[in-house]
Image (tube, rainbow over all chains, first blue to last red; front, top):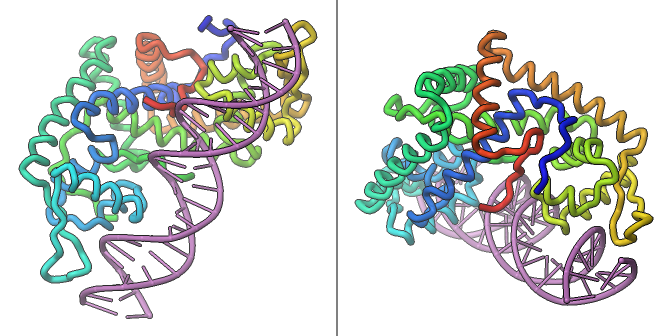
Length: 157
Length: 157
DNA sequence: TATTGTTATACTCTATAACTATA
DNA sequence: TATAGTTATAGAGTATAACAATA
């Protein structure tokens, strides 16, 4: 495809962030694809490891995924042998989700792949520039109230 | 929603970029909503203004939107009075898309809203930090082969 | 009555293929 | 035959409402 006219207006930084963010998300999805999981699965994997005896509703709220969709995602992950549904003994309406041994292993592999992805994505920058970018992004993320480590997903506006 | 456990691993910069990028895209969509258009419409508006006598196929290729979806989007924008379909005189298979006067006006308003969005999104940073962030993002965007001014959309992996 | 998980349904967006009209 | 635009259709994902089991 030929490059567009040089009449392009310089895009603002916010636009650059959406370009880079989308590109990074797509590349992350490619990186974890060999594990047989998609980005929503990856988010669930991390959160279930972080929150003991997590219920599906808690997960859904934190990840911005609808409960009805969460059912399907948990079904898929249980079928992959990554986690187990156990009814809570104290309130039998709840599940207490827990990773299986294989789930723990997959989580570990996912973290390695995420680190690889991160390094390759930032490779064009010097290590000093990488630190600066990270610091500025963290500052923005905090001010915009983004939960650390939880992807906002693409829920409705 | 209570904050998550402090056991959170520090996310990499690539993850921060996807968080911020998604958040920025959502806020941009909110900003332009009063114009009665969505982000795909906004991308078309900018590109039709940039490329004279643009065909739908060219648009679709540049924006990563399928030709079949492009038909619907152009239909909508024509109905809103933002652009016109004119058959090419030299090759009657092609359309030559052109903005109407109202399309030009809407484009102008959209650019103002985009500037407002950009300023408010980056407001937590000092102007020096904003410049640094923009420079680093541009460097990354160039190295990753992202077309200046064209949102990659959310096409398949 | 309220809540967790689940199912059903509608709508949007993505993706592919087939069709038309032009070339 | 090849290409631009269009239509039809199937598959994800999003969103809402309704339902069963449990509290």
